Image 1 (cartoon, rainbow, N blue to C red):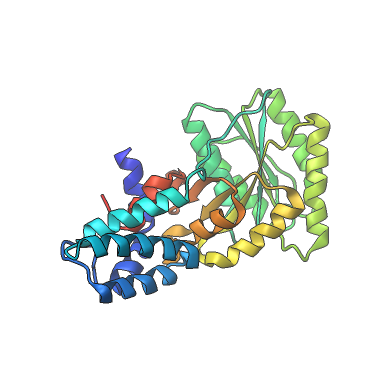
Image 2: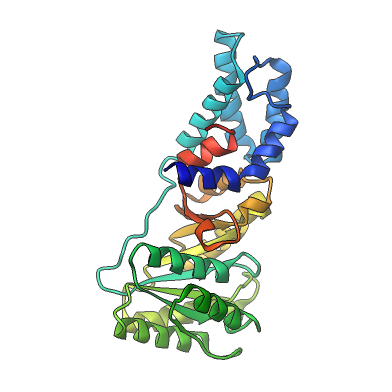
Length: 305
């Protein structure tokens, strides 16, 4: 568990730095004051925690401050962490396997969100857990996507079904399911083309992938996850709403959190959509894709051990 928390702490270091730099380290040992509370409010907005969450955190810290004018920074941090954990109650999720294998996970999102690398990293993570995995390279729209996933598959020793750029993505998905079933794979991870909701042809392609998968298994896909670039902050909420309405999302993966100071956006996404968060991308390596833990996240962003 300590190793997992260490990953969270390292992954959110830029968000923590953004808060502590603005607050001049009020979460250290010294007492807080009215001025530091104002600075904390600004810092939380900067980190993209949003109005509702920032208000909740400050309300509870201010209440504690009224009772104890010698309230220490570490105590304030603990209060903030507890509020975040409470706000995120119910946001954690574990992958539930389908009644019959393979369990199909479809990765959805806009270009640049990290779908392809996340697909590969998820495959590696499941493999480490003793599961057998097949990758499906269904991003046949972007020229380098198939080769990118193939490269990851070789690196991580994962089987893959792929075709050429411009191939029918739904046909690749169909073949991949057949291959996964024939090999007795526990999971099939489908990487799809990045798309904007304004591109109706690509949105239609998603629907076609679903129909084709359901020819093999009427219950597929069992998981439809939106991969969101965490550095976009709360701007990603509208994006998620559109995909949820179009495709019926079952969860989220939030990536690139190690490179942003806007790690508070996770809270806004959860409050708005109530879609469970399965994994966070906290770095470049396969092991940097970590199962989401509300408690670890809340402690990490407030710099607690």
